[in-house]
Figure: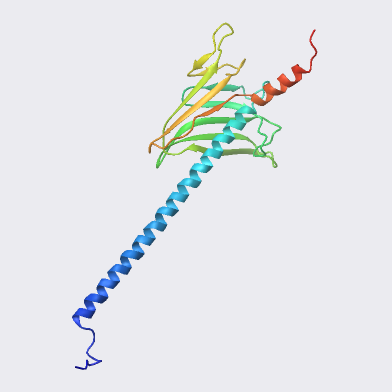
Length: 212
């Protein structure tokens, strides 16, 4: 039996067409969802990689602290407690002018999407030499930050870990910063030796002095 070409689609053909369209829509929807998840995962990876670079930059700034420094505004040379840290340094990575001290401050900051651990640096622009500041995130979605200081607060004390340090006469031998995230993600502790580069210079010079 011949079918009239003007009769249109039968009910069966219409159902088959709808089923095919549903399958195609489901396939495309799944593909778009995979692309979205991959993009979000890549963005999170980029952010965490940048945060790791910022933590390494903080280490470098702390190791560049000069052993002798005249802070013009009278603020502490090195000062910190369990959640905050502040010190002056000579920045050698061309992000600030190295002819003047740069102030570094680490603290927890509350943002719209949660808390983060940030480092604020304020000094002089490397070329224009006018006031210049930067803000770098060390950890986003931070649950907590804990800073410890290893050394002697007094000459007759034993070197132990302290929860705060405020002494312009001497620096701690080590500083350890531990982070935790709200999502349970692991962040490696950051440990550094303040003024490490100047200490090595003085040790190298003293080794050239002949014994008495």
